[in-house]
Image (cartoon, rainbow, N blue to C red; front, side, top):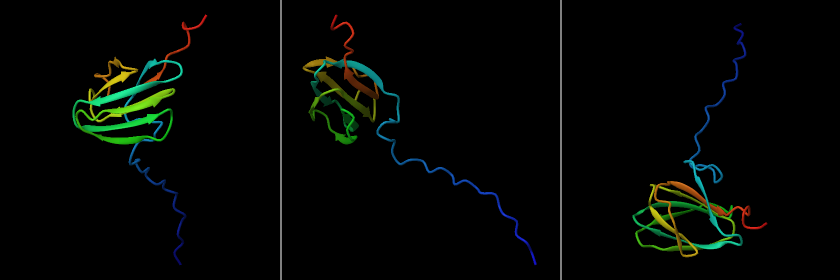
Length: 119
């Protein structure tokens, strides 16, 4: 009779996720403190075709297939996270003031720190 020795457990190879989790973007996001306390209207205007992933105020990430000149507008209370398929895909305005994001592939528009705004 042949005895079989117990085989050591082989851990399963981790399965790479199909998409990054909403709180873990695939690229490092740059924080831009540009939203006034109380929120703002954010407008994005694509300058080329591409893909954009957006999360407003910590909500579920939504993916948009962008075409040039397809304007998108949101009322943002506290933060807007954005990941682009390529840097410079969109132009961004916060309450009609343009925000420079051309160099970023991922960015987070967040509320301006209250420091310096109140005594």
